Image 1 (cartoon, one colour):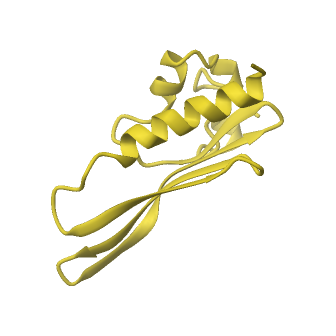
Image 2: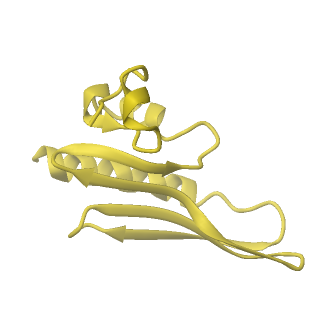
Length: 111
């Protein structure tokens, strides 16, 4: 299997695991949105916590030019460790939520 397919499967597997974790309060649902054709993977939440509307992106990951770009990471311990544990090299992961000048200090890819 090629790297692109491997990365797609790894990302989907990790997000699917987080998608299955139920919220402990409110009427909040997890929404897993996968667009393999465009290499976009999102984990969203939507619902109500009492009178407060909840709707937002928990995780947004893209595959761009052979690298995994983490655009948003709202998972408690972060998705990066799970990607590395699944076999993705650190130099293939871009922490896009950090400004470019800080990425050189993260131990992950700059771009």
